[in-house]
Image 1 (cartoon, rainbow, N blue to C red):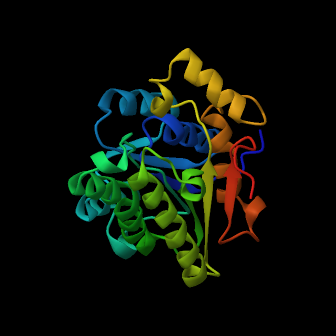
Image 2: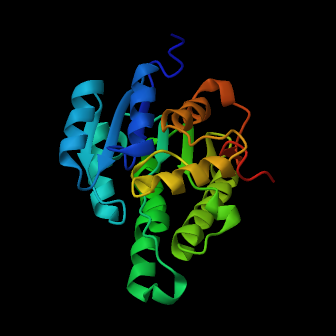
Length: 245
């Protein structure tokens, strides 16, 4: 094994399930010391920690004080008293399938608080510990395509891309900032699909399948590693050709 992240300290938000869990596993397999936040999935977080040695940190990304506390636990101190963070993966998010006429102001705010404000809070909390390193935002193909049943989600993910690109300009050259835009991934978001809907999704994708979370984690590891040392401000589409632009 190449151990691309040997000796590095990586923090993953929303790491207990789905893409986040796959990223935690991939980073630990590549030699990193990993901490991950979770909000409600205590059993999943405990199981992941036992299987990988990663540190579970209970925190709601929409709450800056909780994220700051989680970062301090991971680094072992506040400010200069803590260890450095070499990589930050911003994955925490929510998606509630809702048509626009049924989308309430409160529902809009909940999505923005978790997805976009959560990304802001994650960076604000971690940045004091990042002298150098890499940030990876997990956005979505829907940031480009839109969707008829989740305008709040698509808008929040598009906002994440704007935030990531701005940070790439502001934090260079010490910190690289990039994004991943996944397509259909076999996570809880697709768990309610009927067999017919699943086949429909697979037919939409030129590669004719839905990605396992591990196929999103691979590009994340690449962006965290030295192999991507001249890449910043980029968005990598990991969607099987579903949306080519």
